[in-house]
Length: 451
Image 1 (cartoon, rainbow, N blue to C red):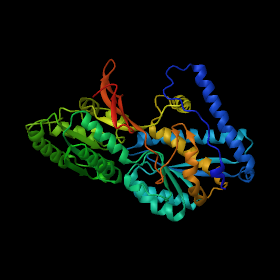
Image 2 (cartoon, rainbow, N blue to C red):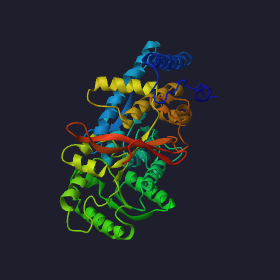
Image 3 (cartoon, rainbow, N blue to C red):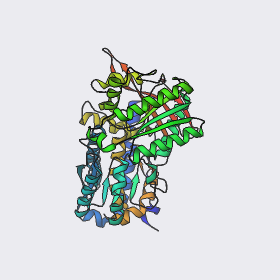
Image 4 (tube, rainbow, N blue to C red):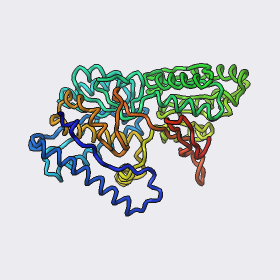
């Protein structure tokens, strides 16, 4: 029997919300969880001492974005990964294990070719586990190399359904787009939409979310007017001329509004940080000249996890425009636990003025998962680690909760939060607020602040 199968699950207790718990109770909970984790790691190191006695330093690679459309999230991924490495090494050291882990972070800047080049460099340096890349386009681009060279790739945010492939070397600690499409479609119907125009990135991520949303929306009785795709390379470089796709959107909306009414046609945008350039152009060039002008629909605009809580989107002159259309956006979340609350607190102390978002929390868990699987495999060998990863994940509770994966290597679905933008404070500034949630089991929306 393999050590992965024989290994008992970590018994970290999940604590949702923590609303009425005392600070003392939370501290006791966290201490108990840390004690349990240390006990489990101690069992591994004592039963399989060779790796610990080796005194090796094993390097985990990371592919993130520090300079392009997801740089806000990408920087948090880097920062939480550094915290994770320190925590892993602290646990090992306290148990007398001489093994240490290091992390090498590469900025692939949302450039698929660079992501592949970076992964090849990792492979040449004997790196067997890589956290990232953030995007599905990059994950798809590097997958054949990862498979051929047995390098484990663990992404905290890639979600394209096309990459839900069993037995490959890509594992994703976020649910895939089939679930997000269901959440987005239900949100559209809940807000009263009879028809939708989808404006989307034309890449694995954009196509996956858009297709999943369209399919589910039609199943719920809705009509998909158009799916307008735009060039990703130009959008990420900041050079895209938005006039052409927005002309199509303007024409589509005016035609659809004549059929369904302006209060029944939704605009759903599957984008990253380029959203701010798009909405600025829409306001500047399409505020007059048609029967229905920007912002066109009387419904809120809708978005996805590529936009949700992105501070760059609401910065500068674009901010008030985003607040005007609300941009109700879905974001995969896990339950709050004492571990996630502790990490969020430590993250805020280490990086004042910032917060640990879902990418950040999942990247922290990804580093732990890679290191933990290495200990169970008793070897920093991608083939051995890949063979036990599903079992390891099903027995691991991280800061995001239970890490159970589907046979495809994707996170087992749970629920999505909904965030939108409002003007808040004094003086009023565009602000992301938690507006509601979608429950995957019942396919229902619960609003706390309806857009």
